[in-house]
Image 1 (cartoon, rainbow, N blue to C red):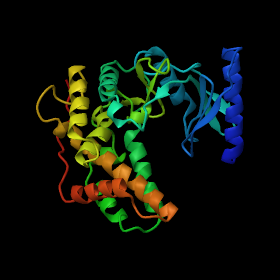
Image 2: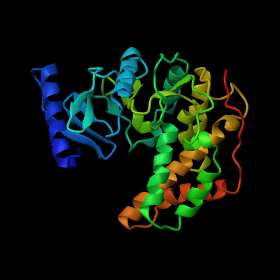
Image 3: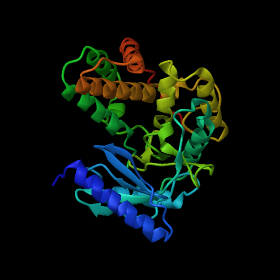
Length: 313
């Protein structure tokens, strides 16, 4: 049964408050809603964060992902409890608060830390039974949302670019390699410092964690670079740090693009699909950044992707 987001948000806030008070008798009682989206509601009470996971979350798969985060405390932020709680129609987890990346200070973006954490994650042996990384499935859902949004002139180039991708990148066939531990949805919003405000950086959000193609975790910054949204210097910092940390997604030296091209194209199409769907829903034109990713899709549709075999070390 589905419930309106208001009652769910209120219940989640109450659970976060109870969890915070159970952790400390001197709780300062500061509260905030950190995210309120259909695929995830996140609230904070003092030093405790509660998250309502997507409605379609599989309990066993989420439990496996939480257990892995508990075992990798130097890479992933560990949950306060590895067992999810059922709340209304959602699974809820509790986490210690970590300080996020400052969106108003792009020069301080922790590209090296993100790349090093990814490389360490990718080199960690995946435990048996861990589900597949959900990156391609999320991209496919973004395309479905675009098709459902209604007509828009920018939809056609996005759909053409999507059609050029191999079936695995569209979640229509198995991934070519599934032995690597992957985050599945890497962007700067997935890093926090714990303890706040100046502890080491850690990865958060285990919803898409699993085994798969490690290039997917590098694909969003690669796509931003290819679209002109990430300066070359920042891309070089990220790629160099990943290589220096022994990351297996790309060769140690030389052109990384044959290994990254398909995943970067998929993330570009996913980003553009979300942008167009949101613009249709809001009845507004695309902004400059959204237009840049749509234009990239238009270019992608005329040049076939590099279908090189995934690099492995």
